[in-house]
Image (cartoon, rainbow, N blue to C red):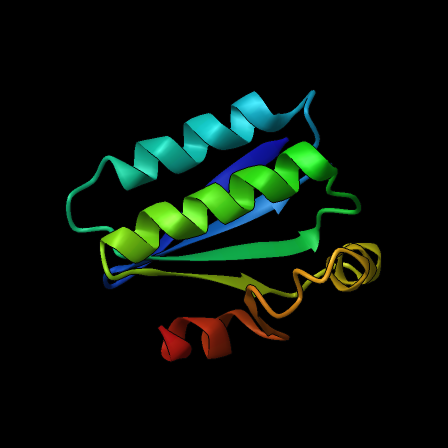
Length: 111
């Protein structure tokens, strides 16, 4: 997985490209943990437009990341979900666990 970072005030947008699976989770985890190590990070927006698939390991990590940021009074928002990932979120009933947006700017304004 390839991850690039954009900063919007105290919000970080991670632009993700590639599948979020057990095989690619380490690269994603390193990018997220690097950003979370910054004391001022509270809110994280994940741009999943170019993420065609998320497996159970990826979903589990997303939930854990949401819990960690929640302890800091922060939030995780999902933006521009790929159609397949949106369906996976529905099937696993995690669509209600994450706030989703069609646009990055909307997600950033919502945090």
